[in-house]
Length: 412
Ligand code: NIG
Ligand code: FE
Image 1 (cartoon, protein in one colour):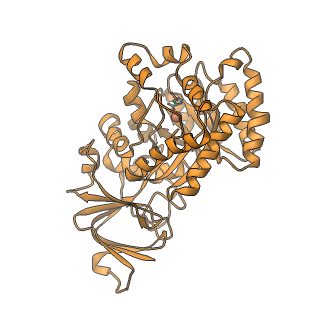
Image 2 (image 1 turned 180 degrees about the vertical axis):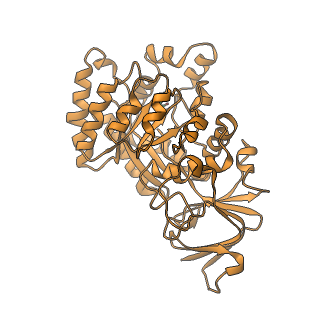
Image 3 (image 1 turned 90 degrees about the horizontal axis):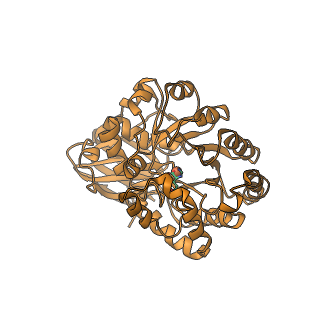
């Protein structure tokens, strides 16, 4: 099936030659074509250019995008979409003065979600999760990474990963799965941390690898969660089972997680709310993508990732939602892009690069996603008529999406 989109006011993130990521000053450049056409065959981008050069061809469907922008779908490289129930009560407790840490210390937080998840059937978990997936697809996300980490038992973790696999089979959005057994120590292992690490390494990982249930391995490297040494053990074991690391670091404290990630050639290091000069320095010249999660900073009222310092240091930066029940109950990449501009002082060009090509890199899919390039996946956002792409962050909170194309088909 061929689809031709014509009269596009501005086609964004056009990359003639495939690039894998953009870093430093390159992030300020967003290549575009004004008054453009875009041609798709099945789920692939076949051609694009100025309307002046529109080829004379017969197609199955023509879409008129007069006044509208077209851009590659958002690539959300960090989420925890598969979870059971919600943590509304903890939200209200925080409004009333408790901290995220105090709530976790009384058995709330991740352990609260783990309890709920283990009491929920696989079918129910699938049904709750698919609603969130459908919501983010309509918000323009065309590729998403989803983590386990609310099971914290062999059966619970496998259940989450099977749900992710099932979602991936049933929906046109591209999904990557991450095993996050090392999200928190379950209460029964509170005094026996080695016991839980053994369970992850000797029981969970072999089963996950055997059933090809994950692409990546993650750990929450943080005071009160997994130490740098424990995180290194998890990364080392994950790599042995073919899983590249993508890790949670520097959310509340800078304890050496970034250095550990770089040492194990992690695909990404995520959160980065608390960054020392050494944390920035060690990322220079590496293959590891730093990922900021500004809607988590917003929801928890914690610092924002110092994007300006990192970009000035020549680093790349990706943006993701962190959609989860505790620290970010929102999967809206449009809000993430706006928040990055408003609170982190990223320019619209930098934020769009961070939420497309760099997000794709942080999922290992920038060969096929994250830009308008011939041969790449036809996952696209068509905006409503807007004056310029500055509207995307400027009109924060407005839904500016007219339609979404996934695998070459308009989503209904
Ligand atoms: O990325 N920081 C660790 N994990 C999640 C939050 C987990 C939760 O509160 O349920 C995060 O913010
Ligand atoms: Fe997270």
